[in-house]
Amino acid sequence: MSRKTGNNIKPIGMDEKTKSCNVQPTTRAPQPSTPSRRLFLRNIWLGLGAIVSLEFLWMTFSFLSPVKNTEAGNILKLKTVGELKNIPKNTVIPVRSGQFYLVRLTDGGLLALSLKCSHLGCSVSWDAAKNRFICPCHASEFAMNGNVINPPAPRALDYYPVLIEKGVVKVDTSKPIKRKEFKKSQLMFG
Image (cartoon, rainbow, N blue to C red; front, side, top):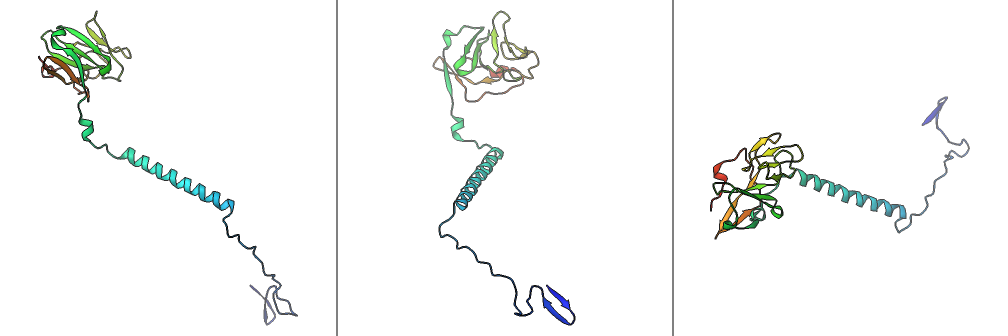
């Protein structure tokens, strides 16, 4: 900046006698050769923030990416129920460790029904007096073959594949099979 005085242009802060500036030079304090505590803590916080950000991005990516089918998921989880000759016709056997009921219908066909109601997943119980499965949450009722008798359940109970090997009944509980209604093809005969 300058100030105009007559024809002479003089910079502001100039002394007439010395023709020099009155500005004092500033001196800086010498910087220590080791980092200060403030710099150290700032770097720690920046590092922690970077780690948290990377973890958040990894979790978001993991949540949004599709699940891959692995061969480990296809391994059979067989539950042995017992010998076929010891299971009378027209009976329901609860197998709580396998999360299913083994049903033997009057024609001798076997069906393994899931314990979970197809409405909201509550555990159904067998009522022998009424000869049906009853869901305690919303009063859905299912026939012995798993068909819906009383809604709000939208479909029949899920079932598991039944295998008979050398007279021994086994149920594959690796994945329940969803269905709309009971079909004769879902039964296993021994």
